[in-house]
Image (cartoon, rainbow, N blue to C red; front, side, top):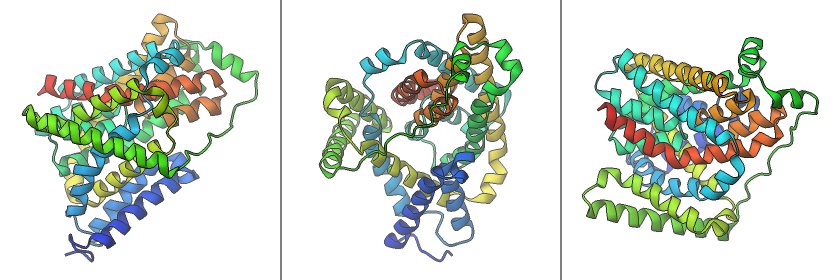
Length: 376
């Protein structure tokens, strides 16, 4: 028995929102910058449930995963204007394609090297989606391939440490002399002669009229997508229809949706709530019993991904800075990638990094589901 019961809605919501707040706070401080706010959200949830403060299961967790997460996907994709992505990404988009191929290659090779049991194909798809796009794609693929809450919890927990390793590797690679000799960089040479661009981005404003409109559109997209999926007998893949319809809206009305403020931030709040619920639903004993193989599998994907990107950069004479930004867009998403580019002084690569990261959000779910079906 836990201190809070499964039906204690308001106290449980207070805990989950508090964990989400802590994650955002950590992201803006040394704690999150050296690790990850998401990791601390999950760890906090695991601690609370395993010390019997909150229950392992609750309708509150189910509501977040079943209803709020689909609602968040359009909010995170409203800026996915393909024309703008292609126009502003430049040569980085080619390298991003190679980085996505590196993730797929790592997922497939690792699948055959490491026995993951029944979760294998589903985990391969979820990791491919997550390391092509981001956490939202991981969740979308997990829902599409019908991973159980326990499987999602274990997979995310095992992957969190490796995601931190990926971020650290991307930050460290340009500083390794052997890597710089293997993949030369003109951009890094120019940046060394200039002051590093450390200007932060303006915070995403929260405007009630914009948020209300974004939410209304997101509800409409989810309603239409789930209705069509049920009509077509493809209810398990409703999340894919949500993604498609959101992309259609983003590219049909790019000017209107680009002007929205606060939509992405609201989507991220929902995703942090989801991670908090995942942490609270994690049984630490089950994690220790089953997550070790998934950890090594994640390490294999990361290693093969970076080897593919660096080898392609060497072969195609791609700038090391562009290779790092493209790999970052796939592995850690647009915001951390932009931060890496900005702090390194690669001013011209900040926008391409963001654009490729958004492109990853748009395509990651489809690639992840395809890999899961291929390996099943």
